[in-house]
Length: 337
Length: 225
Image (cartoon, rainbow over all chains, first blue to last red; front, side, top):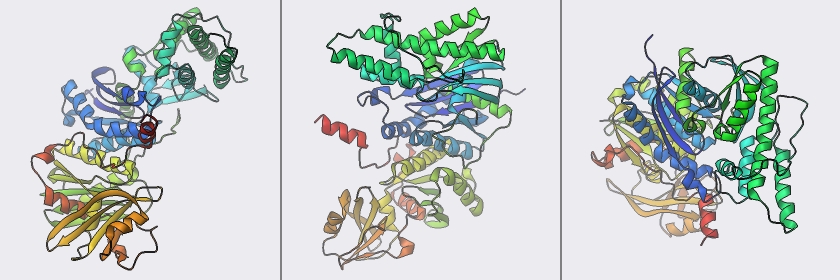
């Protein structure tokens, strides 16, 4: 079969990214222009500022991705772009550029769901990975268990009823005065803390595939508030470690249940929080205990990137799933559409 | 030189194709659908209708603002990507200038306006002096009182997003309905007038004429003054 080169474009939040991937598995380039320093002083991503940085960076990033891959735009077989979920203004920059590139060069346009992209980052981590497998999606906006039955066939088993796990990380980091983005900061702080110092409650839900983190978030915030009111010195490392333990434990319990129930043997981690080492290690051990295995993306592919978009795009391209020129951004796009 | 013009600065979507100063085709819609959905299909229709191939385009001209931040970025991202893919020149045109350029009336002040939200407007003042189109007052963000004040006692035509402005002084009138909307043919014409084969090679990192900072930056600056 002829090689297929896919140009991936991603601009859903605070990274402008482009990548060229060959046959869905071989990364020829991976360019990411991060805006983290720009948003830091605001304590979080400012949508209008993110969009302004995207329009400034989008073409240079695409150009660099092609140059680094040593391919010409004409050699590309299809243009794949994130069309949701994300910040609408940010998404529209990537979507507009991708549509125009595809139109100008008469190439197919492929609209990629960002969350599916995160799941597909695992195909780059493990060359032998094949459906069916389970995916645990853990990011700033989503927490979900997805059964991947085929390259274009997904079944949502359950998701968070309220806050996403990553959202809870960011909120607690902010209250503890840690810089944005808060997830990696909590993880760093937790290394020196005792995960069993404080017992934070996790939600008991009727549906064993569902998650809930708002109760846990409130419990941590209340704890911090009460200790401060009482004039006691708070051990932030212990709070970070105990909170992280509670989140990881909830994620692992659901994952174990899902694996036992479905009989699947392999699980992948996806989304920004999948970079968390404690989560990786604890989930790997839990899976080992029940005779299952875990795949997680390399650190650079855990956060937002365009390699995963090109990879997801490749499998859609192979299946002939393309988009028309009237493609629009869908900020609230859900998993398993 | 074939010129492809794009204006998505306001809720109007306008695209045009020109061969030097001759306008071949123009499509303008104020139909409420989103630019992201409609812009590419309309560009495609335009070229098909004119039977001009994408590879024949030499220059992409795009409306740079002021205007809706998101609309400007849709237009600019589309223009930049096309220029990059087809190795064409790219020229940015001031949206207010293009609005005034539509109205070829001599000896009268032309005041294009675009809604800047919260009762404010982006306004600049232009004039035709014979064949010369000149800017007489630069773009500012003004309220309606200031907007009238900048016109003074001069005879003046208002165009652009002036639908919500009422109670004009006697010397100010709205332009005829067919000249109120942004037209991409004016984007093409101004790009041709100001074309520069050196600077218009630059197609990376152009910034729309936002004029205003984002609200978050304004608040941050107030707090940290």
